[in-house]
Image 1 (cartoon, each protein chain N blue to C red):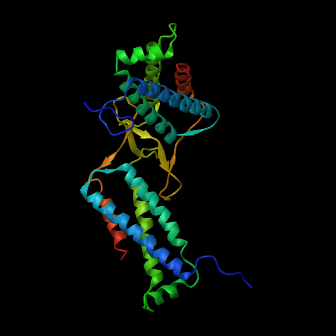
Image 2: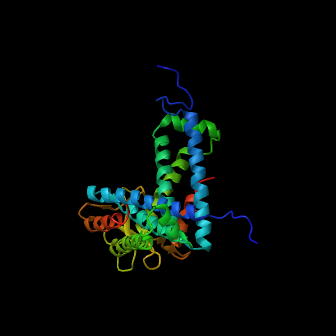
Image 3: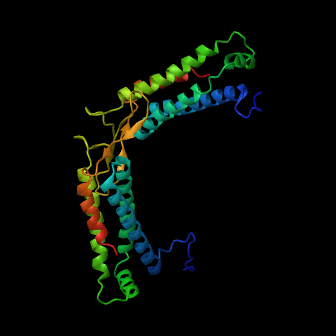
Length: 150
Length: 158
């Protein structure tokens, strides 16, 4: 005999996955718009990469036994390929992380060239700014991620 | 002219008493943070973020002290009266402290690792394609020069 269930049930896992996906969509839409406008701080890009890494883990934690059938029932579409939709989204998230990791400016030692001193002797730092031209390829990757999210 | 409220949203600048207390409070912050960084950097690695946070904080404190100094002779006279010790040159002590804050900032700015364009070599990616970054770590030996500056700075404050 098991004790009364206090842990998450299928409905909570399914809604959590959709909520996280919505968060990824909202943040990615903001990043896409910012990339088009230009003047994006290096810290914003690095934070976005960390955000995506966190959300990917959180999404993967939603994969529990029975979730696919439950999701199909909830969507009232028994033939919906939930697994493919989910995996496509996860792959696009990782592709975006990979793109940032590969293309973020770094020196030969792998140090990220993200911040400089202001140069006025105060000791304050200032983040590097990326133009819309710099971020054209980045926007393409982010838009590809957005295309996986309804 | 309306009466100057205390702690309100009025436009009258700080009075002498408030400024003097603020100067001493800021000096206390500088001393405690500097001691903490000095002591920990002597026995363990310190991440780049902590050094940059420290120097940014020093910059803010330095600006506050400069604003107080800009109150000029009345401020100096008030401080002397508050100290009430004819043998103590409070202006010289203040100037020595702020000069050493500047020297400490200069030390960090000039010695912090950077590339040819001045980009700070402060972070790397963590692992392979995790999307997470990690601070570069300074060893106690790396920070020996900074500790010398910190010791001098701490010595300027009672």
